[in-house]
Length: 171
Image 1 (cartoon, rainbow, N blue to C red):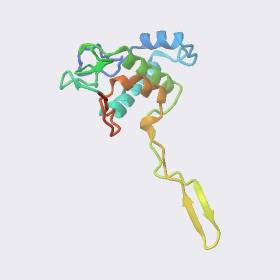
Image 2: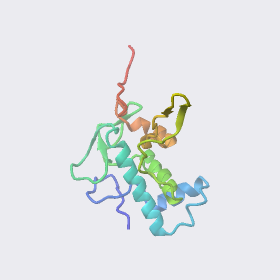
Image 3: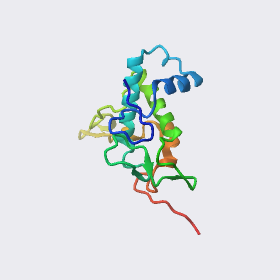
Image 4: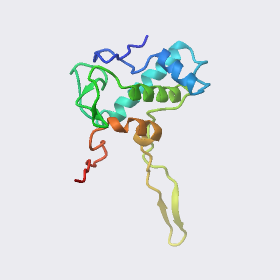
């Protein structure tokens, strides 16, 4: 059974979204391969989605976790979106929705946190004499695989967004 984060900063929470929330959202979006999954498979997919979010967004979120012992990154305090404070006793609907989007991918067997190969061994240039082979660099980055999810969550990232940039405001 899932331990749903309600916004209370639970020490044993393991998902931002419930199976019922995922069922409603994915049915409304016409994601047909979700509904045939059994309850246990849906719960596993939601846990994997939440794990992915922790692994990829923990250092990017704005603000701070509300409780030291909370299991997940949300709820948070000190977060503003469009200059409005985000309540520190909720998990924003965009975070829940992103979790569901990722769970749908996990539910159809997509690896959210795959092991990356160190080199992809694709030949960039092969010169026959005197024998020279050049390979492409491995440019796979799992943190940026899900562009739509990153875009939906971008307002909740800190000023740097975890990408080594700073927020610039011209006066």
